[in-house]
Amino acid sequence: MSEPIHTFTTRRRVEFADTDMAGIIHFSRYFVYMETAEHELLNAIGTSVHATVDGVAIGWPRLRASCEFLRPVRFEDELEITVTVRRKGRRSMTWGFQIRHQDEAVARGELVTVCCELRPGKPPRSIPIPDAIASRIAEQPPDELAVE
Amino acid sequence: MSEPIHTFTTRRRVEFADTDMAGIIHFSRYFVYMETAEHELLNAIGTSVHATVDGVAIGWPRLRASCEFLRPVRFEDELEITVTVRRKGRRSMTWGFQIRHQDEAVARGELVTVCCELRPGKPPRSIPIPDAIASRIAEQPPDELAVE
Amino acid sequence: MSEPIHTFTTRRRVEFADTDMAGIIHFSRYFVYMETAEHELLNAIGTSVHATVDGVAIGWPRLRASCEFLRPVRFEDELEITVTVRRKGRRSMTWGFQIRHQDEAVARGELVTVCCELRPGKPPRSIPIPDAIASRIAEQPPDELAVE
Amino acid sequence: MSEPIHTFTTRRRVEFADTDMAGIIHFSRYFVYMETAEHELLNAIGTSVHATVDGVAIGWPRLRASCEFLRPVRFEDELEITVTVRRKGRRSMTWGFQIRHQDEAVARGELVTVCCELRPGKPPRSIPIPDAIASRIAEQPPDELAVE
Image 1: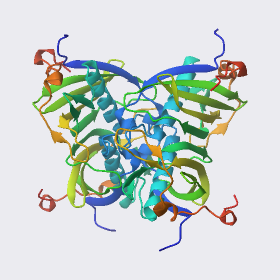
Image 2: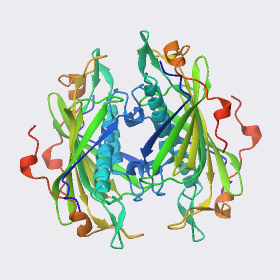
Image 3: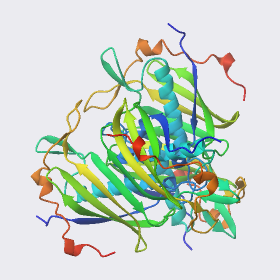
Image 4: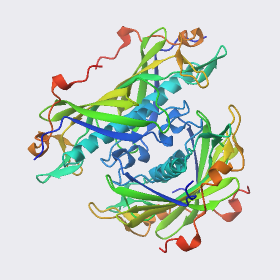
């Protein structure tokens, strides 16, 4: 069994449909980029954002989302997106995101998600993060935080 | 009970997030505009694209979609979208769409949808359009078709 | 000349394409809803988010965006979106947003935008908000803030 | 100099934000998938959908788009998208698209685009496809067409 992970990096390219008439990526698309990077991290530890764990259908509704936009990003720019585990709670996760283009930070954001049992026809109910998932994720040690 | 309807008109304004770096509406958004106009027509006859009719959960998966783009449309342009019943089949509907800006046609399109029973955990199964819906919709009489 | 405004309310309905497989509105769409409400406020005071004022092309790039998600919102829910002027700076605006469904708060968010001169082929340059716009907007008086 | 190309294949994974409340990819997103595959083909021959060729700013506005939806596609499905040159005109291109999941066709579509000179503040004007681009693209020979 490999070590729990606290950081994950992926890449994607800005698509034409992601841009707006200002000639740059529309800011709402950063939230999709962040979410998909989170989902890829979950895949990397062998689960999915919608998975069944020990017979329970698990989902991760979003509680809060935020993003700062540091530099304009354009069509066909190749972005590097790094997810870090900012906080691992008993029932919730705080994911931090760094988005870079050519080694320059272009945006940084955060998603707070809560682990829920999904029940057909009922609202999601928060539950403790199952061990099978929690044991595979670790908070990022402070001494590895990038100085910016 | 009012007459069955064969045409329905709605309006919407082009939003900033609908535009792309070419300064005009991104073509994929026309399909959302068309679909939402279809859903408003269904509301106008007292149903919804996802409704329970006689105890059966009904949905309308798309079979085909097409659109011609006649003129560029810009941010904050106010569009008029007209849906017509091009063909009412036993199990499927063909909707035609005219999109106009200031009385000029800017796009026209078509959606072919099929009436299905939605069953949890199973693929949708096509069914005859329930009478409660079919009786409220009529094919557009040819002599009312606009000459363009 | 009417009074400067500090609050503006609009309505919109959740479209099918705004939903995701969890059966609720995708959180990234709230940012589009917020932005479009901001643009409608700008229209209400006689300007646009992309306008030429005193011969200068003005735009409002986003600096920061955040949103809290309080309750799930579903297809065809009718939302009421209220924009308030949280802070009017010399060069920037902080807009607050309250999103309600049937009188219940479902989300609240914030956008920080900066007034910029748009110059073809160059990056946007921040400028003081032109008087023609600034004089039409007022910060929300604290005693009118809703107690939540 | 390599041979002109008549076919190009890329892959992408269905993202959460691409799905809708029916639990499958929203049909409007197929048009984005098709367009991005077209853009990657243009990159593969050394150009871009927005490029300057011999001092002329070139763009490719869409004239028509259509798609047939053959099978439902779900979150995290890995799709293979093949673009073929269906017709190379003097001023326009017709691109065909095959979208497959696990070797099964799930959708097929077409985009008709027209080569235009982009002039600031004026509508795009159609021009003959520059040789630098046209010479790198070939129509798909009929005997290589897949029998379906």
